[in-house]
Length: 278
Ligand SMILES: Cc1cc2nc3c(=O)[nH]c(=O)nc-3n(C[C@H](O)[C@H](O)[C@H](O)COP(=O)(O)OP(=O)(O)OC[C@H]3O[C@@H](n4cnc5c(N)ncnc54)[C@H](O)[C@@H]3O)c2cc1C
Image (cartoon, rainbow, N blue to C red):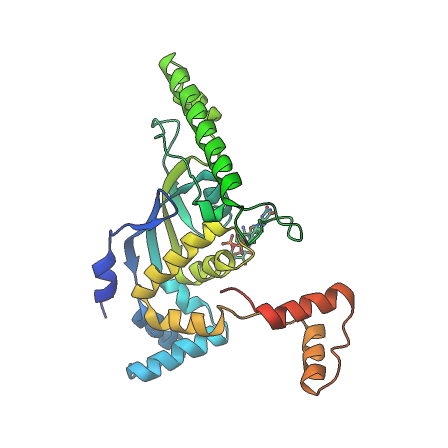
């Protein structure tokens, strides 16, 4: 069998899907599809071609049982544009290959992330790493947005002035803030893309990177819909129970108290109530 061509994926190749105020993700290229996953798995089992239903069953079996290597046979190249603070979280996913625009080589464009008003919130009190779910009241949010705009303007003015004086681009750029937009080509296989999407779509991840993970899930699902059907069924919204929690769960199912105390009991109840990623 030759190259996998998926009509739905071909239709969206090179199409930029907007994310945040100035960002985007587009699928540059892909290699493999659901078909490649089943071919790779059947090579290891020494079996031939089967029906579509059997293929779907095999993919679901592989995903459920964490037989992950056939998913590594599918590869995606994305072109994405995101603020630097999102890129810093994104780049922690080390199993990708990337090429980023160079601020040493190019003059960076005056493009800064400015959140939508409903995304401006106060610092959360119970989650040190996040913001409150509800937005700030309108007047205060407008003030925050005004401050951001003003600081962005000043930073870029400083950058432009340094360039004007003949300062090297690699040095002038150090005045630019984390909200500056950057872009890159990012290539990853499906197994590791699943992990990226799982971690970054989760409610614990920052809202801005979640926006990218959601768009990338929809794009990648065009290439291998069966794999994403299984991923959505078994991974998204799922939680992992520890051994201790499984014993507590069994007690609860038997109509007894969980037997957990303090923070352990709170974590357990939160898992039952809120589940995992959306
Ligand atoms: C909600 C959230 C909050 C976070 N907060 C912080 C934070 O405060 N500070 C911080 O520093 N990070 C933080 N991170 C980043 C986090 O620690 C991980 O670095 C990131 O999520 C990437 O995950 P990964 O290592 O599984 O991904 P990948 O790097 O893609 O790795 C995928 C798999 O390959 C393995 N792997 C990759 N490279 C190697 C290697 N060289 N050797 C051996 N195994 C390898 C990994 O162990 C993993 O199993 C946060 C992440 C999330 C989702």
